[in-house]
Image (tube, rainbow, N blue to C red; front, side, top):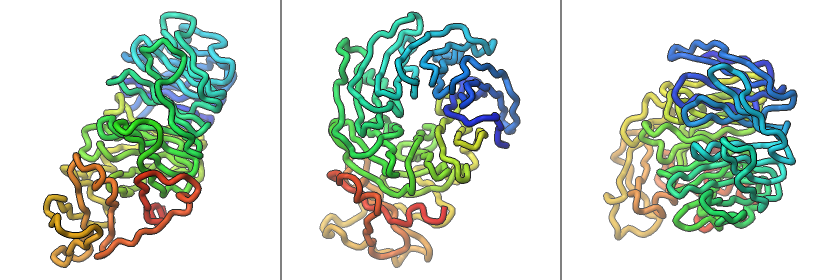
Length: 403
């Protein structure tokens, strides 16, 4: 799809949950809506300016009839998406500019501001349900875990916290240790059993829910700059359980597979402009991924074109062939670090050891290896700036080289 010019820097974007419509929140305070079709054609649906101050974040109601917009004005605006007009305004919702907003349930909204204050709202009422002040720096992102009715928050103070929205106490049920890095983005993988967090130093920190929220269990270095946005793939793709989309300050939107760690490719390129937000349409299950940076344009990329060669549980990379070797086919008597014989494989083919889902330790410790009989571990320069987790992953420093 051709780039959609919006006339100002995009802070956030949101898709209608059922229709092919995308909403953008802009630096100049405007909210622009665009309709698009399967052929990649688009047209502006409406434009309004609820405030002269920047619109930093957006989210829609469950049926898409309402759009909530907020930002530097510290107010929450409710927009009727059918008419493109403001139907309700909550003035002075926060004491500081609002940085994130998310619909948690049909009756609960969550907002987070630049001072680390989190508030829960009932859209039918004017006053907040509850407020939380355990963070002392900006709220960067939200993740909703519907099975536990928990809101996971990331903050610039280097910690992650877990809020049970059913509780009445104004404090989280869990908070991580200081990760010694700004936590900027968050996404769930493996049916929500693991959570991936993007950081300022370009490291992906992996939290395992079954191990608690105190500290991450893995760190995956490789991105040359900060990871400002994360997004999951639609569940229709076989690799969606361990593949995510990452938006970085270097302007590249990447598809990255975890366990084993592998760069699948670059999905979109914003040049030298940092990527602020990425999202997939139709409630995260659609065809198009939207990405917004500082270049005053919205890029819409067709995921089917990017992952058209994906078959079964194997994503085929354009640069190499991969043969999957089941862990059960390896002799259990082989010592750790034994070399798998690859002489029978065609020239230019790499071998990947695939562990079963029940053996996370095996899967997490094997990364994609090129056509070599022995792997050579190397330390990433960024990894030295952070604490080493229990299961440190050492990625090849050329992980993203040349992209």
